[in-house]
Length: 437
Image (cartoon, rainbow, N blue to C red):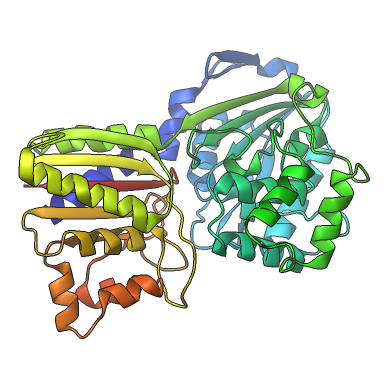
């Protein structure tokens, strides 16, 4: 079942392959470029450029280069360290994630120069995927990179939802929250988006650089107070947000802004596509298969308890699907950091579930990030069964203490139960699997 779980996960990655997603939604016939259901005559444009950021931006850009060929002028994208690869006319910049670094700023400045030269006869293809919020960094006037880093770190540790984190990222940026579209105007902007956000919200994915922003400075201050960060964030950041809330700093562009009249946003891939790919593989392996949801959120250790309870129910009653059973879910749980351990949301999910299914045979729990990364580790996630807790205690490990200290990595590593894939080239949140023989 462990091998089956890994093969089902790999099928989900294949379904969400960025190159395939681009090819399904972008096609060139003669000089007519079809983007989804919209067609553009390239004779109307003197230049076609590519900008963007994300962990999947390189394979996306490679597919765009193959389709456009000599019609492509050039451009620049930014991806995470280790996720790069050779391209032709498009420059690749590597930078930090989940915290932006100086390379994030340098790559974004080069992107801005491309946009500043754009005019009404320029077609801008913007490639966005998960990780774009950190990789595309240009601090708002008066905010330093270090202050953005401190702010982001606090938000990541407090358990805030991604839409709450990105609300602040948008308001502390020159390019996010629709400002990229504003900067490119009057160019025509086509944004091709690989979603890593529950609900596929355009204004949240990569902090919505080409989408009208639904949040405000006042929303940002509410998030700061909700998580008790008012006196922990850099004073300069708080002052900037308060200035915005009182109208002294211009708001991000909203619905109805003229910049969006010349912008097409198209989601080309999502967790839903990955989940469907997983289901097809599970069915082919002979499992009675049920998709629970592609919109899983909440504290990872609590969400895991629900999945473990479903595994127990299948063993006892054959509900909600009889064995051999495969339950599939997707989404992006969060972790509130309480300890000083090493791990990620997927590893913490699996550890919490392993504690719940201790001693139960014929059950496997699996969770992994589709980008191949889980927290600040080299693992994508982990896998466990009813024997995991016994094996760990025999090695002198304390599963409950590891969970308390957010130290799941150091439990699964000696068990050789980490899922390590390396960079996958895609990024559509996480996949969770429950297998019952």
